[in-house]
Length: 507
Image (cartoon, one colour):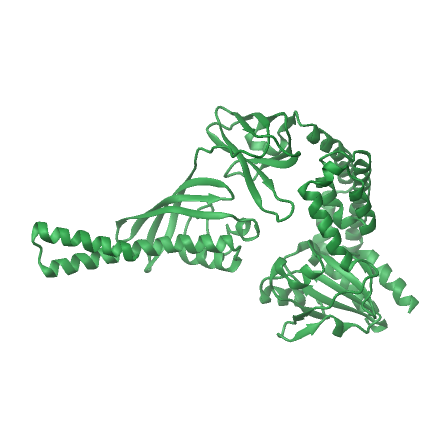
């Protein structure tokens, strides 16, 4: 800003020498130049503030910036309004966004155009946004974006992808992967499809890994295993997820593991009337909901059994890391650890398996039979409450949940039922929320009639308690005896009811 002002002043002095303008005119011109620079800086600051908010996944700030500075269509092509058009960014913890070479042209006193480059999770595009000054504030009223011609990054694997996607003409395609350890999305390669045809190549890969092919502006994607081979991708851009993949041995193995899963899902859908299920939820028909839940549990049990059998019979398959990630929360820890230890040494060296071994180590701290670690968080009134201060009752359920978590809210009536029936016999609940705002948290407590003690640090997935207990998904719970020993974990519905009834009856 200082440099810009000095430059304007320098140019103005040159003007004086050449044309002999008066001192009064000079002051007016300088004031006008400074005012123009200030208006341009305001627009650049709006862009920068939104970028920072997205990088930090600051939902509240994103909403405030959009509501205050945007009108009509935002930079995603979405009609804006408070909390609209931001959910994808707001809940994406893997945002990697930069804003470069932004320049602003003032068309007149009330309109301007901002141009520049922005890179989102490795995808670079040029943008042009039209601003309009309303009530003293600059607001975005329209935008244009264009993907740039990409060059594939090297160093990830000697592979060759040959593809044809009907409808993808002069369309940028990106090859992405997700880091198993930190969840970050990385752009591996990219190409421009010409009349639907494209190719991508890379250097030798250490081992096969799951990737996905996508294109900006569409939510659809196709996932497959990339390895050192020629892989073909054929399909239609409008149904990218259904594209056919050939040439990848690991992907073929993964499809074998998934074939039984798809069959079980089809059987479940045939046996359950989806319309009736929806009506049962709306009418809160607990009997029907219970029936549906039993059907889902039975289906998932069959799916997990076939996946476990696949891992055991294919220990050398690089599809196993992805399968095991899905099994982690649904198997008893000793059995899961044994399954991981049965893998071929080469597969065990992959990043995903190393990460799973770390999670196993973390979870052993809160495994059945261990003393639950203590922690202290504030309740709704800001009063610190420790977990150990709630011990002494025969059974204490440490329940991790959140107002934004639909499965948690669906499970809450079951927890309420168990609490109301067994609280007089020594059963208590200690609710730990992973919410971000106090209002959402407190309103959900009231609406769901959760009358037990609640605590939260309102840090979402950065919750200190969630990290201490290695909670990676919710709902999650830990059932403690009167001494704080974990006697059960992640039990819900009838299983929770029966377990509490069984243990309360023993005491």
